[in-house]
Image (cartoon, rainbow, N blue to C red):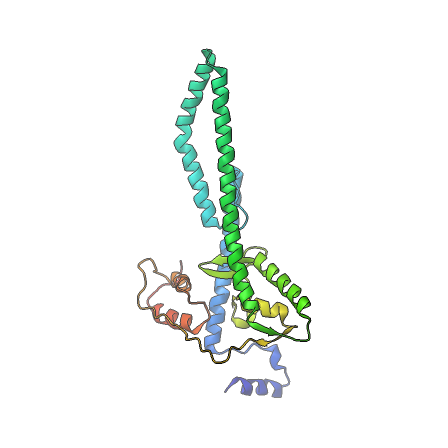
Length: 283
C-alpha cells in the first residue's frame, strides 16, 4: 500500500488525510533521530545556562555574546590559572614596593611603574578587542557568502522590479546572517535561545540556508535556478573505519557530521546504519 492508497482509505473513512502525518519507516527513523537530537540540545543548553550562572555568581565573569560554552570555560580556566600562578609574584612585588615607599624610595619611580602597568593593560585590552572584532567579521563574511549564494540559486518573478527585489533580498540575507552560526564546520541558524532551527518538513533536520531563503522569499521566487549543459559530479566519501574516540552512537552521529555528512541525507543514513552496529547509546 502506498501513500496514495492510504490517503484514499482515510478519505473513504470520512476523515481528511491532512489530519495525519504519513511517513515511511525510514522517514520515521530520521524524524525520531532528529527529534531526539533537538531535545538533547535543549537539555544541554539548560545545563550550560545553570553552571554559567554559577560561574558568574562566584567569579563575576560572564560568557561573551555568541561565545561557545567550551571556549568560555577554557578562557575562564586559563585566566584563573594565570592569576593563580602570578599571585605569589604579585604579592612579593607589592611587599617590595611598600617597603621601598616606606624607606623613602623614589615616588616618581613608583609612579612611572604604575603608569607602565596601566598602559600595558590598556594596550592588551585594545588588542583583545581587535582580535575579537576580526573573528566576528570573519564569521559574518562566511555566513553572508553562504546565504547570498543560496539566494542566488533561485530565479525570481520578473514582474518584481529589480530595485525592489534587491532591497528585499538584502533584508532577508541580513536577517539570516544575524542568526547564523558555525557548528562543526556547517552554517546553522539559531533561535533566541541559541538552539538550531529545525525543518519540520525535512524530518526535523537543521535548516539549510537555501531552505530559509525559500521560506522567506517564496512569494517572489519563480523557480530553482537551472544551469543547462553543466553536470556537477557528486563526490561521496566512503567511511571505512571509526577513530578510537568514537565509542557510542551519539559520538558516531557527531563524528559523521564533522566529516561533511549532514543528518537526514542518504550518505549519512548509509554510513550511520553500517557503523552503529555494536555501539551503545549515550555520549
